[in-house]
Length: 101
Image (cartoon, rainbow, N blue to C red):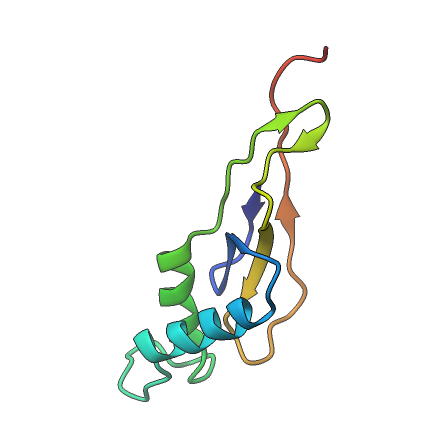
């Protein structure tokens, strides 16, 4: 699974309690605040922090599939993490490798 953008990311995390998403966003905003001192600012104050957050979390995930099902843990979910204040349309590329049984 690959995200074709530099200001969002893909993460696998707990998906039972919605507070996890809020806490993740709050923590990332604390670690990488919007800061007018970034040199790259031509696309807005939220752009460079979005690039840093995307680099920290990554733009791809590898997930095994068994019997036609994603092998995620009981509480795991796949997040498309939007790091811009107003992100646009996003494209994800899925590649499935293996043998048909």
